[in-house]
Image (cartoon, rainbow, N blue to C red):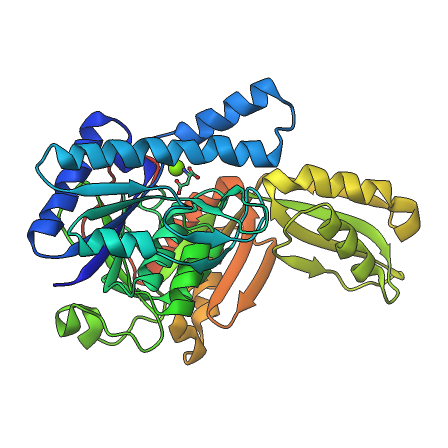
Length: 427
Ligand code: ASP
Ligand code: MG
């Protein structure tokens, strides 16, 4: 008998039918003799709808009240799921984040988990019940208020529960079959991976892969939680995300017996914009000034490139999420005279392509394959950045899909068959 934590995303519990299907899956796991703890997201697009509603009644909704509102989405799905399980003759009990002992800091809308005290969950499990926990929410001890963990936070809830309860595995269910070598919506020949290292998964998630949330992967890596990403819509196994020293539960039957591929996957990100600060005086301290201003605007900087200066002035370009670019531009424009740059250029027609693989550490020529593939495709590169296990390039957004397909082929990642894509959002 194992203790299994399962997380179901919004698309898996979008309506009554789906809730019943999920209930059946949970009951099947219970029937197999396992203890089951479930973290559930709000039904379908509930969170977005609640956000829209909030914005209709107030231009800037109070963060405390927004968390009260948004956390209600998960309360709906958890109670319905428990009811559906009851009607199948099994005992189930739902708990809000605070009842489940999800203790967070006080930052509304982006709270961090500081402690998990799942006393009530343990009791319920000991009494033989299936436990259902509202994802994405917690409680702060000082303010005594409800918090939410940020969009997609239910993945983190599930992983945190798995860590606190010392679960055998944390299964994250969504409408895709697992983790692919690329987004199958962009690259139909993408293949499902048997397993992936958590470090590689983090890089993919940070660079546009949406199948798992980065904070959940980080938490799992830190606390040694085994993640199994799989589909609600099929019974086939998905992909294991293995932390350091973790064994593949499928053993040698998985790809473990083969040599690991150098490149694990290709990620695409259409969500970035590029800002160029042109004509910056080439003297010490200017980059510090610029990025202090950008940081204060709340924008999250990704890539940075500075040109060599011939004339005593230089251009500094950087990328930020599209949603942050207006704030960054405004903040910079407000300090143009102080910083002494000449002008600002904004470009939101870019796309970012990243190639990720732990094998890059020990193999040479990995980047040459990327550049050759792009050159053969006639695709122009605008920015380049690397980490130990990643190479990223910024391209025109209209080139991104084609570039990703070309590069996927060049690294030998193409599968024989087209990947099945279930309808849905990937969550
Ligand atoms: N319902 C929340 C959201 O849509 C949390 C989640 O789905 O994980 O962001
Ligand atoms: Mg959701």
